[in-house]
Image (cartoon, rainbow, N blue to C red; front, top):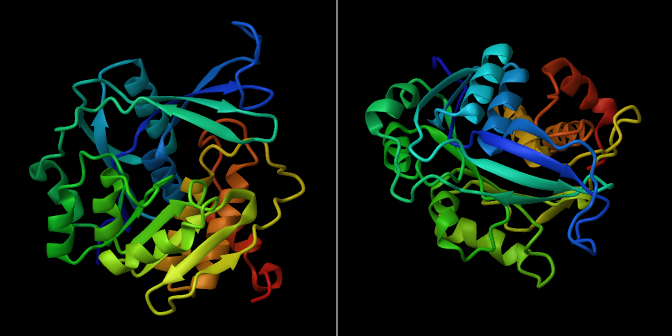
Amino acid sequence: MHEYDVLVVGGAGVDTIVRVDELAVPPGDAVVVPPIRDYVAHTGNGVALGCHFLGLRTKFIDFLGDDAQGAMILDAYARHGLDFSALPAPAGTPRSVNLVDRQGRRFSFYDGRHPADLRLPSAFYLPYLERSRHVHQSIANHNRDLYDDIERLGVTSSTDLHNWDGVLPHQSTYAHRSDLVFMSAANLKADGALAPVMQSVLDHGRARLVVATDGADGCHLLTRADRTVRHFPAVEPEPHRPIVDSNGAGDAFVSGFLHAYFADRDLDDCIHSGQVSGAYACGSAGTHTEFIDAPTLEAATAPSRRPPR
């Protein structure tokens, strides 16, 4: 028995959300926008809280700054009851500024302030890793050295490559050393690179499967057992939760997928669970402000509501 169902490593920060009419620079040198707000956010935060609210025993570790943003994060985790441990971040807490348009689409400016040579020491992470069933690695760079211990201990792993183009070396370690690989299709569809990049993850790494989320176009799945990319249309949002903000949808997809995967559901059900979780996240303004819980997810993914196969 493991103490934790999932250990999430890296990816805590604060988003500043600016709501705009469209994702384009308007004429002139200033424009009036709705109130600009800060949210506890970033990818590790979304996956950790998503798993926590779904009832998974979740541990989250990271570097965190001794600053106002770090205090904001600690206060949020105390309120939510999330088990979180951190080491001091020498450059402070990472931040992003996200533009969100009227359709809920977003563009993010991420500051990536952690020094390139920053690493989580094994004396800090090993006690948590040794007690975990699964580890989810954010592409935070400071956690890339965990993979030797992950493989030595036989712990399964996942990662989200976000908008990887299949070339940038930063994500390559995560792509090739994780068992479950999630990514965005956004930068790959225009030139027909989506299927080749997904295939390359399997060809050059240990992944069992690759999932590419595709926003309103659903998602794509490729497995080692079946080398054909399968497309899954998007699920319709609940009538009482129309799409207002896509921030955090990919993180919610990952947590919903893992919830079903840990319950030994088949992959179609895992995809459906991820899609419902992602659609739910789009129904609230701001990043990671509302999370689907297990009863709501189970009701929304009941057999009578599953899409045809």
